[in-house]
Image 1: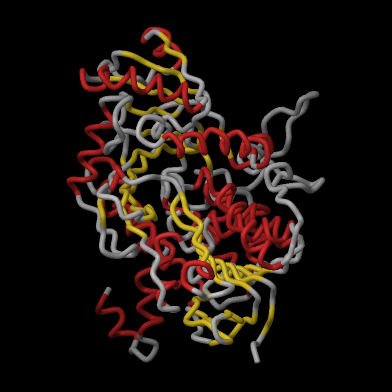
Image 2 (image 1 turned 180 degrees about the vertical axis):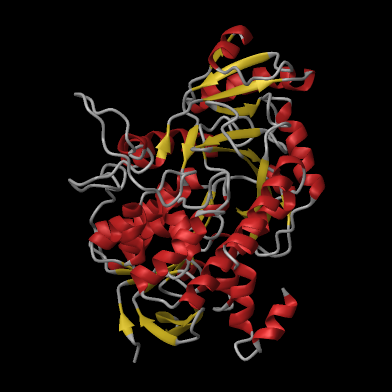
Length: 537
């Protein structure tokens, strides 16, 4: 007998899986989401956060462009607290770009994208960062920044309020079958090793680049091509609006202002496995060089980290590779295709179209379950409560700036100065059993994602483990070290200039002031004599 039962198990805690969980719950279908890591820890959390206008696809992938236009407008209504409406520029810097322009303008018209050609002088007045290489400029108001972490958390919390569950660090290891009918999943806690089972009527595979591995557990094939994209984070907002190169999509041709930083992207390289994503110095250097053609300051700004994500491109069997492959998505009905009832996969797509993807796959599963309730996710806001918090915009208004009718709000203490995170922003997550690590706190609050890369706030978060979760000092210290290690993985790819100096300051801070190396050594060797430990210092 299964340990628990539900209506539908959703595998995958990215934007699509979270959107599916919310859609199911809003139709009154009991559901549980399982994710082998943390929410938004895969492809979604490693995107550049561009809310696509569709301009990048309108020439070569018109269907995907139209989806971006329509879904972007919906997200601005239902997920406004996760979006910064920056607008965007498409700029030409070469003869090749100028030759692309007529096709671009025609594609925008076909897709319904607002495209206004403005003079370079006017563009520089609005956006002083535009480089001297820029020759022509198009203004696309549909572009913007979408915070992928807030988006996923918003969908999951909306589903939880309607009775759904989300289990993090829960990996699916197998399936329970009654003939050709799926009746449940076998899971393992990736931290404790505990094995459990969940009985269900249907399973939705929303694991993106990992969809083929999940399908293989049932001896069926889902062809997903993992394509690596490397991104570079600059320590400040180089531009007010997003900047795209007006050409066939290539490397280093997007600059996205993302709250306190800017994200420069991206490459496109096929990789053998979605978790093998090496970052090469040449990739980082090439993107900075290409980005500097669009905006001044890219080459002189402090590159504070680099990271890589993987696009889950669906293989339709065509000859196209990498950027030539469609950004569209597909719903695979495994009952119809493979004779396995109760199993459906959703693959391809992008964060901007996550809601539409969730609607399409939920439509199919709901019909199979006999549920006729229509999808309402395009109308109901994610935060549909009276106590709604405007997550992306509430912070500066509560940090001592003048009140609208005079007087000042008292200054409040901060956990993270870079991202203006207050103690009350992190408190609820320390009470959430699904939050297991300080990295999980980072994804939910942006603590540690600013220019200092957790140099100070990691110590404060470790202190909260002691006060809020009553963990002992050594355990909290280890958790702090693990958070710093995840930050280090991205920082080590940009060790030059001012970033190298910043890294040396951070190292000195934690090794000398916080005495982190000695504390960890004492944890690792509790039986060591004091003089032996001192000799190693």
